[in-house]
Amino acid sequence: MSTANAPLITVVAAAHNRAERVQILLDALAGQTLGTDRFDVVVVDDGSRDATPEVLARAAAAGPLALTVLTQPKAGGPAAARNRGWRTATAPVVAFTDDDCRPSPEWLATLLETLGDRDDVLVQGRTAPDPREIDGMSPFARTLDLPTQSPHYETCNIAYPRAVLERLGGFDENYPAPAGEDTDLGFRAVGDGVAPVFTPDALVFHAVHQIGPKGVLKFALRAAEDVRTYKANPELRALLPQGVFYRRTHPLLLQAALAAATTRKAPITALFALPYLMNVRGRAKAQGGGTAHMPFYVLNDVVEVAATVKGAVRYRVPIV
Image 1 (cartoon, rainbow, N blue to C red):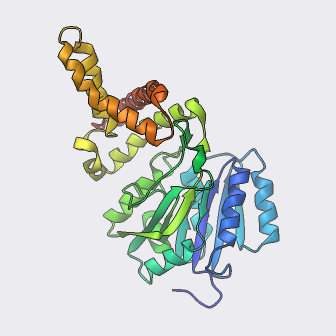
Image 2 (image 1 turned 120 degrees about the horizontal axis):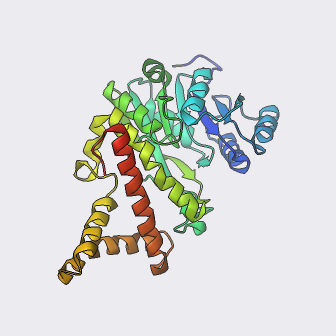
Image 3 (image 1 turned 90 degrees about the vertical axis):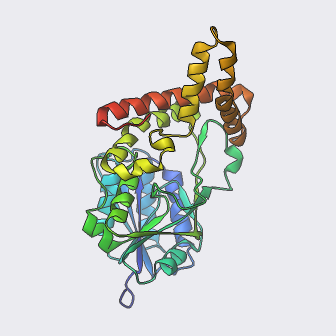
């Protein structure tokens, strides 16, 4: 699988305006149980305008990582950045993570052990909110919690044989925003005969971002572009609730809206809004909020449904 002194695996990450976060990532990679002589790192700076270039330059000069820094003069999106990164890599295995992640010390060793010598599998690890930041969870924060195998093949924690990436041409750069490009690659790989394997011991901690109400709504708007993934990969629609709903909350919201529209003529129909209201209350509580945050959750769901419908019309996909 490798020759002496050659890297067994290359870590690729795209970075954009997260100077402090990317330093945390590099520190975590330097602390891997897999010796730093057995892997290398490629970070693609995707048009950052903060101190990210300086952080990466210092890290490349200081070591101990075998770090290659590539610079995109203008932000082109994660698909293009990651493609440039893995094409620069020389190892037979490419592990992807993000600039807001902190891999556990055993991450790379576990990915390699799980992959073995096979070139017909991809390996996903477990992703959890960073325990150092979990106290910041709120309705206006964002993180990733992927305790089991994900059908979306998120690049925060996944490894591909380089041969698979070469055969498939990597990420589809028609996804300029971070919305579905990783899912698209994963589904194309599976369709090409690559078997997805999950290992919970390959753990990556994801940052808890304080993005505020506007930031949360901005993420809801991404649904319009994410719908493109379902157009390109029709089999992905089988994973949707009832095969047509983007999220499980969407049919509940529509049911509640219908109940609200008919309550004046038939008051008993108000009961049909209860499942949605209970869902909203449960989500708010789970994310560190309370009853006062429920109207915001409703607004967020309305925005996401509208964005989904917009994407469905644009890409001619029956998703709500």
